[in-house]
Length: 391
Image (cartoon, rainbow, N blue to C red; front, top):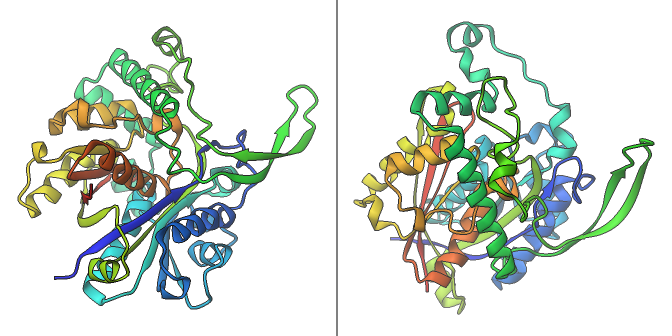
């Protein structure tokens, strides 16, 4: 039976949308940078790569073109490497890894690139949504903002504001400690680019050359008192700027190939893709999607929660991340051990690929054997991927 293995991973640093270092950088440029680095790290010859699958939450913002094809070309891949853009919104980057792995195991595909990219700075304000009339009448919650759904989860399942703020602080602290220990250094590939800076007083915009060599969104000096003093986004709600993921820009990529071919080539993979599952839930509580996707995934593989050594559960909002962790019964010491999106941001289509790459590298440091990447998805879904981690 064929086995798809992950050979390498690479990503950009994450930068704040609109005000950060990547606010003028095209998605193809970011994605190309991550893919080029992942391919170079893999040791696989360029002409062997069959396809480049890139997740993107707002692919319609990429000038009407297939952003994955643009990324492959920008990365310097040969014209024979195809490109496929994938949109499962927040889980797009994880979905590409599942698609690439299945192409290898089921179709006999050669080496594949998978990942995700999002430039919220360049596309978010230009994307409009037009509700479909029947859906708007019969299932209007699908058009809710995710902030609304996060507040509903908090209300419906009794997740207090205090617990959400404490969770946000923990994410900030863990990210800061991981940065201090250099735990992201082997993921992030420094990138030179140009950013726009707007003077608050005059409104004048100037351009500056910058190097994106770390995640820029987190706030190491965060205190619980500071978080508790933030006003909710919605009147009477729970979600604040301190207990929800930030809007951010970035790209990540991994390379995959057949395990037998990797062995023949003398390559040392980071780990193996073992399985993937999705599940739907009510749109008004979209944040609890992992509660349904994770059991489906584990059941297919004859596993239980305690069999998993390391977890990456995307922190879209503290309310849903806390509820999912505790409802599933995940040990907090095995869960988001180096923080998550509340601290460093969530470029929608990129995050699943970022978390997978981090799971491989952190799992190796810890001697973990099995890991799960899981996340909620806008519209009312959850996704989960199972990985074996090689030591």
